[in-house]
Length: 129
Image 1 (cartoon, rainbow, N blue to C red):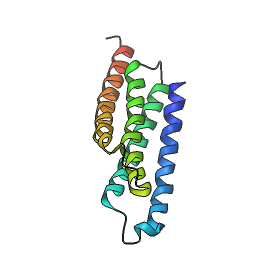
Image 2 (cartoon, rainbow, N blue to C red; image 1 turned 90 degrees about the horizontal axis):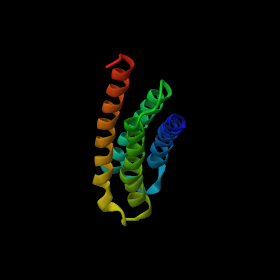
Image 3 (cartoon, rainbow, N blue to C red; image 1 turned 180 degrees about the vertical axis):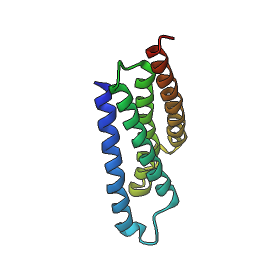
Image 4 (cartoon, rainbow, N blue to C red; image 1 turned 60 degrees about the vertical axis):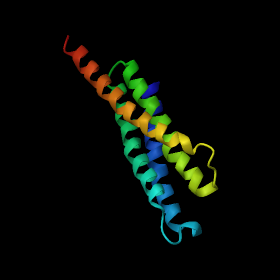
């Protein structure tokens, strides 16, 4: 179940990043250029959407581990706390969660660590270690 959730989420967030990139390029409020903070949010969204796909594919290859579930959940949390938070601030002027942006980055860091552990443990268990 989780492998479908993370794979689907990764694909949707990747597609959404393309839609948002095109929209931001044409929005009147960004006529003088897309702010660097938004460009960073888009780049991070694209990169971590691929990370979600990797988590989903890894989980689909065998029995899902708690580490892989944690990796996918943390990547989703990072997406909301970092990228979507920045979009809301820049487009809607909604600044209530500004302080949570670094937590989104931290969630992504933890997600990559959890993915590394999950892949290592999965590989080790298949080899009989």
